[in-house]
Length: 632
Image (cartoon, rainbow, N blue to C red; front, side):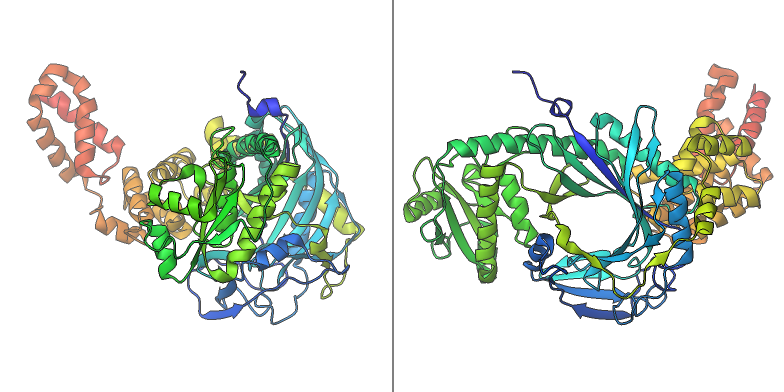
């Protein structure tokens, strides 16, 4: 049998790029978007779903409401105000954000509307204090080109970013308001059939157009790629949210394509089984039966006064663990759904005995629930008040997969390049007019101004960068694509430090430290600038920069001075340096006798290890060579 690959499935993709704009204020107030971890304000809300203008509920909002989460918001007056707290109406639209959005639309040859109507998009996961996100359709149509493709633009919107998720704890979800209201553009492409290997290039090309404006934010969290994925035969459009890194895109698209095809295979298998569900007969309380079960999960649930319930599925033995492709199983789909409600998980018959559930427990369960050899079952532990809605959702999901194939979900990208259930796909009922903001008129002068400010192409920008700073092509490309491009230009224009060296610190030194698990977010821009100032003044050597950055990125130091003190970094004057090198040369006279001037290689390593960044490599090399020649 020929192995199926994503390419065989006819993968169709649509990209949605969300890019924060580099403005000095938020979209509908004067607050400056400052990242912070200090909060002096705390308040709590409970959001609920509301009907649309047509009297309909959005399915995603209803499903989110079923989790009954209480939302706690944390705020700092420096980065948010009463607008973010939904205690004051929105102010006028930020002029700079509008200008940047129009420039981006012009750069993509998208047709800009003469009137823009702010809308409310229902969001009740707590990421907006209002229960909705403000968004405006700026333009439609347009395109951009890559080496192999011409990609159509569906729409461009200007909207406000959501609050920063600080995590869940039980029935409480926490958000910080510093990001809420930051202006961003959402660019949606037309769907296109593509080899998943090329999807990264397409997203990169669109990102480079945005970066060429020099009016967008850089760094983690400032740009996010959502991707819509479907397959040719029997597929449905699945929206995958939260792809933070371009390297994830190919894996996410490939996984989702194989998941959809795998679910179609599972659907056909379900149709061959004569399965129906009887609510009265097929659900049993197992709390007492499992009171002495050795499973820690079950015992912890019982201690929390939760109920243990068994759900039987006639003729479904073997199907929960059936895996058409690696990692694609009906049991996994159900486990993801259950976790949505804050429940730790669910056991299915094809994975037991395991997790402390023993053969005797299973035999007792089968006898109690009258489960036959061809039947499957689930064991669920959760609070009694959530039990019915969770079981109903499990049954609905299995019925949907049986009758229709692929559930139409919104899914979340994982770091491993897979996708997991997030919520049902929103419907048209989630959008309705914003009543607090009048329509925004786009004048002819504004349209002409936006066309004048269309940035140079990426190729032109790259060539300019190469020429201006005498960089090679690879380094110019790396620094242009990095979050440090603006800081790089600021440093090399203010100092006499070699631009190639500065770029290599950003694109090589910091990147290598990140690969070793260190956090570049701890390395603040002012400390980077200060480091190069110290280098120019001769207070530190080039070789000490990696040691300093390692100290800060590891969290052991907050400033360059602290990192220098912790690592005992101080420049050594030349006379002391000569003494240190002479001692090392004397200790290694046999090496010098055998290898002569070639001994400089291994001796350089010994000296630099001894000095740990206290002298430059050029100075060490010069003195060392002189000492070796004198010894010979």
